[in-house]
Length: 283
Image (cartoon, rainbow, N blue to C red; front, side, top):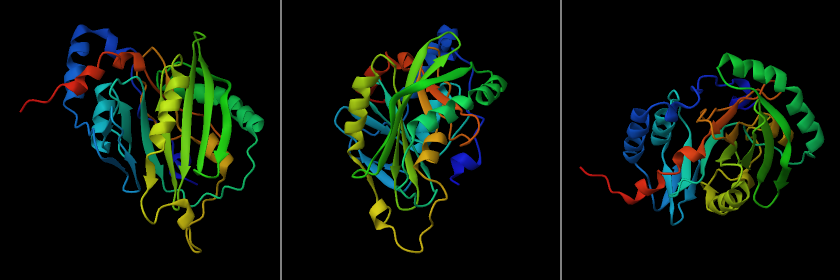
């Protein structure tokens, strides 16, 4: 089983509303973000497995700077995550790689059964969220049912979720199959702009490529074959939800048949930070 199923990462939560609590916090955060090494041209290297072309108007963060960005919003250190975003910071996407092995893509996806499994896990999942000091989240349904593109080798889905106050959010996840594992690309967007941002996200993903020797088509007899299929990738996927309440953090994984941990980010908090890209760091 891939590592995000084998072990759930519980340590990446934070207190909600950290950004808005004090004026001092609001003043300190932009400086920390400005100091990050935003790569604005060329290709961003992802986990030594792949790269993504950085379009004009976008920027990329390495794993160390992605971790720093998440820490700036109150998360513990994390590794093996990479980030790309438009300079407006209207949305961002986080990449992570699981060395699951070669996932056979011949499984028929039953969206109804997958949704029932997710909804059945809400109770246990919310018990775990309570331990982390997080609000309960409930699975409402598919915004975009899971579907697999044989040409791009991408498995994608959008899930509607609801919090205790009734606020609804949508996450959109793309899993890109490779020879030795799966790359997860998770879009973090506000609900109102999800459609537009998803279109932009997909255009950016067109610049994603596995390195030579890592593509799905380069599988050879004797390579490691995953013990899971497409359905398990949906059930075990880390999710990202845009809310207006604060950054909950990007979580590396969840148990496939158990509770789901939801990563979340308040895109609204980034609204005034896009102009930082236009400022050059002083020595």
